[in-house]
Image 1 (cartoon, helix red, strand yellow):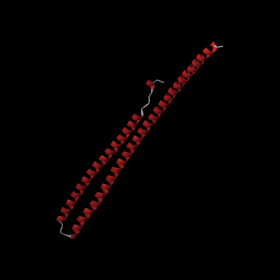
Image 2 (cartoon, one colour):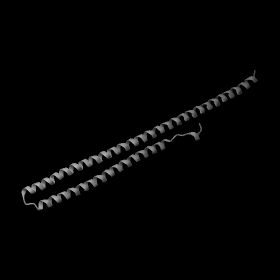
Image 3 (cartoon, one colour):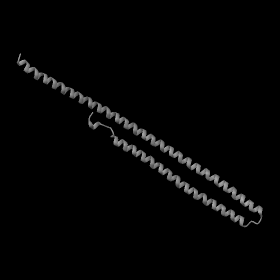
Image 4 (cartoon, one colour):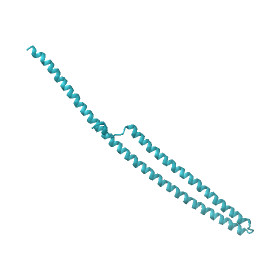
Length: 167
């Protein structure tokens, strides 16, 4: 094989690719947390506004009441709405966090799959490079052995010629 057919990736490039994968995973996680923060802030504001409106309505209802029965009824309505609003808010938040968890798991699975594919590709390229290097070493060894053999043969011939002159 020639150097032009080598299809291996240097370790520096493999490390760079893995670093890129980690950066991408971190960016995706940061985006998820930012989304969760925005959603939580918006939901908190929505919930606080709803509760203020309901409390103002309850206070207006209490303002015009003269009897204890009407005051207790307005308080019970306010309390019922409070429990209902908190239950609805808990459901909304649990759905949001469930959705974010599902998305995070999907992103993590995709990143893991990509890392495995890249790792497998790098391993195959490393094996190909190792096979090529082994072949190059074998060829170089053969050349060295031939050169040594020719040198020994040449030395033996040069030694044999003077010996023949004396016989």
